[in-house]
Length: 73
Image (cartoon, rainbow, N blue to C red):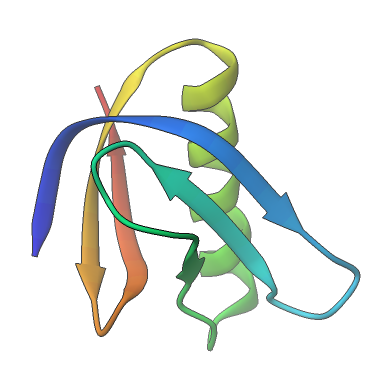
């Protein structure tokens, strides 16, 4: 489900492969970026960090409690 016009308040990653999370305004708890494609995880995480650093809003697609896609506004 798409969650539109949201703010990224926090991001987290660790040294574990494909282990990236974000807190998005209006969405409960940390949401993991869906693993399975190394470049996909990196791209989504980079977009979320750029939005947070630049105070930009995002549209986030969440499926099965994980972030699948992000569009920066």
